[in-house]
Length: 313
Image (cartoon, rainbow, N blue to C red; front, side, top):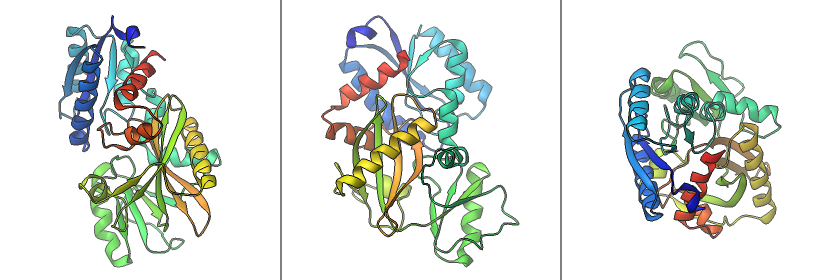
């Protein structure tokens, strides 16, 4: 497979303007080192923080032209990277790039769209409501505690558990500041699971154990707080159902080659619920997709090469 890319110039795109810039820089650094170990011709492009779309478009296209790039390996998370905007630019200019196309990326990034598509496809997802503004809403059909999250953020940024009504207003004010829309979700006492997809096939299920009430940014990125069990120590039937639902969610959004599907398993309801699909999962060695790939016997460098192959779609 390496020979396929020997005559190509590859650009590793990382950084970017989203709130997940720091994670992207770490992910991209590991991918860049891996591509170098494969002795491929790769340049490291750290995308600026600026949120001006025209500036970002011109910056990227200028660099790609200067470097005479053929293929882009996208390691950008969040806004302008994972939401279809970058993919749309690359599509229009005829550049090959890794991962899902602009449409699937947009669908996956928007929890509003993805949840609607899950429901249309018969994929269980926690009961939810979308709030467009911070006034005039009815939550009488929800019981506390609630989960409050932005409609289009990754890395569990801005995710809160609200136990009492009196705390709701202050939390909503903060969460609205991210992208102007909020998802209210029922809180389920459940196991947090995640299933990586690679070459459009599910990898072993990972179970995430964490001491906090909710798996948020702090739980994810504070060293030693969360523990990951892979393959998950759950009933084989639950694992089989989880993998089948993960692949169904991946396909329902039109994703290509790889993703990571976050899920919950409720013992009380004996139900697996899909939360969201991540089209550009974290790619540090400790990230979840590499962990799942490792459990399937796929080392990190092989994983990166398989992801690079997705650009030949």
